[in-house]
Length: 193
Image 1: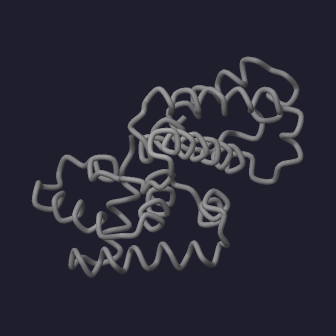
Image 2 (image 1 turned 135 degrees about the vertical axis):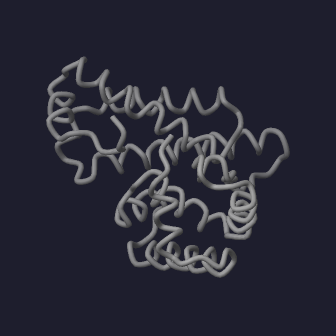
């Protein structure tokens, strides 16, 4: 599967205890969660543990699937919250306090063979100038393909706030790169893992 969304029939089968349907969802989500997790930490063991825990949570809580309106977003948010909690706990143990900023490298945001090195450098510098919240919203919206509503749920903000964050980020990138905003949207949406 290439998108985050899993067919409703698969969710129904999981809710009924179908292990094959769960295995299919597991394969889809494992890479999605892992790719999202490395935006926040390079502790691959921590990320893999969090992915495993979240995927196990899907199976253990399969009976509630029919009561969740946005199932995919629910589990994406669960993974994010679980990972952030582990990162905070890990940082607190190491330093006595907890702060972190997600990092998005240009290689993770744009992997296009036709784009020359100068454009990659400009884009990398422009993304680095965005706030951490803007970088995260851009990643979820354009790289992962989530809707604005889904991004809002994952980030724990309103849909209106999500529109504003993404619009400001795209505008800032447009200014920094002297590109047309439609070209930026095309560049982000054309990228796949």
